[in-house]
Image 1: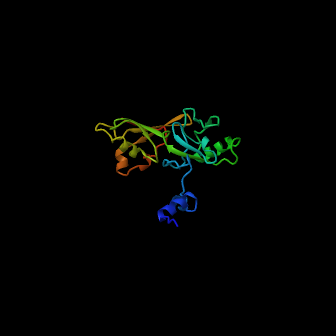
Image 2 (image 1 turned 60 degrees about the vertical axis):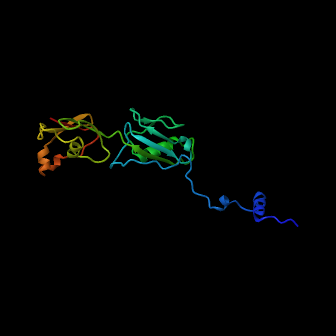
Image 3 (image 1 turned 90 degrees about the vertical axis):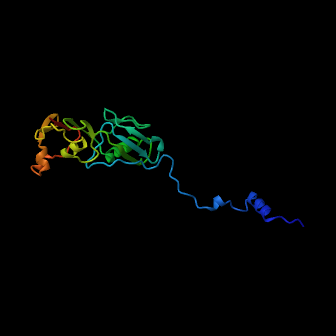
Amino acid sequence: MKILSIRTVCVVALCSGLVTPLAAQQPPQSRPASGTAKPVAATLPPSFVIGVSDVLSVTFWRDPRMSADVVVRPDGMISVPLLNDVRAAGNTPEQLAVVLAGAAAKYITDADVTVVVKEIHSRKVYVLGNVGTPGMVVLTGDMNVLQLIAVAGGLLEYADKGNITIIRTENGQEKRFKFNYNDVLDGKNIKQNILLQPGDTVVVR
């Protein structure tokens, strides 16, 4: 009678399907579906609405082919695969998701859409004049005049600290607000240290 070694028996059994391979004995690992990894969202300020140049991640969970990262164009529109141009500017991410779900209804039943803001570029303010670094600053959250001056490198030696102006346009009308740097530092008339809005320009003479 021919005696087979234990090694031979195991090899024969494995080939004949009698022994389950080790990999098959392990519980299946949970893997995210391709293209469905959750995008990293930017921190949004209160009452945020989408604007020009913002970067969005649009995810259709039932049809990844329609998902894409998009940039809001100067005309306020975005282009999504299979859909015509859709207006994004002026909407919150939640409102835009509803609009996209409606536009996709002819392609997907009960479309499940998520819009995530990945990068904010639309909320810009400007600081000009006698500061360390004049130019544009992106508002990623609430920022007042004093904070903007600090971000811009502070006032230069010959800056007129009592004659700083904030220029704002609302409904096509220009408004101007005065800001006294020393008063605010001393805790006087702190109401003038207003929260900035996108498009504001701070002028330091």
